[in-house]
Structures are given as structure tokens and as C-alpha cells.
Length: 257
Image 1 (cartoon, rainbow, N blue to C red):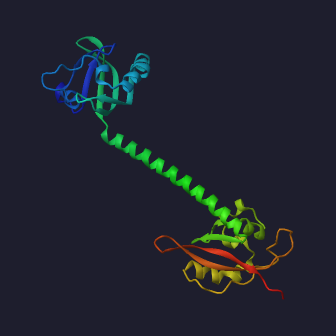
Image 2 (image 1 turned 120 degrees about the horizontal axis):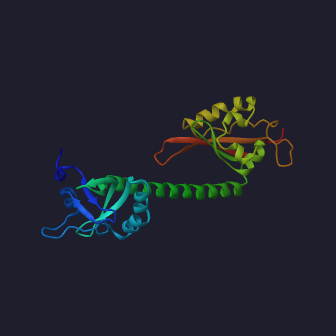
Image 3 (image 1 turned 90 degrees about the vertical axis):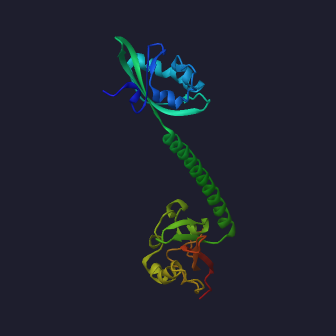
């Protein structure tokens, strides 16, 4: 049997009131007890205020009810006053013929750092999402204020943004345009006319002439009457200069026949 002081984790035994009956050298080591100083006499002396409160309000009631607790996250207070994160398992035991509780404590530096990184990452994600929402609202207002029909399609030719005028002329709601495939917005004849201009823009080829007229039997104005219009497909590039989609931009009404 491995000797008590040779166990590879911090161990202590307490009575049912929390008085420490014995602890091994590993626990004394992680607490950093100074040479000649008296070890703590009770569990509460090893804990900072928040963990002491948790001990009284949660751990003792759980132990009295269930006889054990598993994977409880606490902080110890070292001799130098530092907070040391630990995972704790506690269970009923017997020491020298008397009932007691056996405590096993595992230092959790990595878990603490991991949780801190998770919190930072979550905060960054929430901030990024909030900023993206603000930018989306701003872009929507600017696009709507321009009075032009504007839509952005990603490299998979799916609509990621559209102005209110584009939605009206396409006979759809803004919500229904989100993530809608380009070929689903227009009829087959219009898609056939526009395909070359779309594919060229997604390859990064700008400066082409406006695409053919959008089919007047698909596009209607606010009053519901047929409305023909020119569009141009313009490549979009990210901050690294890589094409990430294209804009479909209204170029004005078609000239009268």
C-alpha cells in the first residue's frame, strides 16, 4: 500500500465539523506552508472567503445528505495569500476507527486558464456579433437611402444582403432574400442572360458593361406595374484583396423602346 505522504495528490481527513485530523505532504506543499509554521487546524482556514461561504451553504449540506461530493471547484488560500484553484472529491471514510471525511484535492491551473480563455472568447464573440449587427443596420440604412436596388451575393451565389428597393423589385421580402440562391431570385431566362456577368464578377473581373435587362415579367415596381432596369455585377474583395462575392447594382431604368 502506498504511504499516505507518497500519494500523488493532496489528501486530508476531517471530522464532521471540518476539523482537520491529518493531511499529507503534498497538501502542505501546495499550500506553501512555511517551515516551522503550524498547519491549518480546520478546512475553513485553507479557503478564501467565497469558498468558505460555498463550503457552509453547499458542501456540508451535500455531504450530510449524500455522504459524498464529486468534482467540486474551489479555491485554496496559500500561505502567501494567493488563490489556488482545485477540484475536490469528498467522501465518508474511517480513520483510527472513527468516522470522518476523506478529501482529495487536484490543482486545476489549466482548467482555470481554460475557463478564463473561454470567457474572453465568448466576450469577444458577443462584441463581434454586436458590432456586426450595428454595421448591418448601418449598411441597410445607407443602401435604402441611396434609392438603388443593391444586393450582395457570396462566392456560392447566395444573397447575404439586399436593399429594400431590390426586395421590392424582386417581388420578395428582405427576410426571404437572406441566404436565397441567386438562381432562385429570377426566372430561368433572366438567369441565363445574367450568368456570364455573375460568374465574371465572382472571378474578380470588373469593368464589364451592365448586364442585360432584368426580365420585366419578373420585376415589378411598387405600384405593381412592370419595371425594366439595368444591373451591373461588381466584384467584392476582402481586406486581403481576395474576391469574397459580388454586388448586383441597379444602373437605372432601361431606355424606352
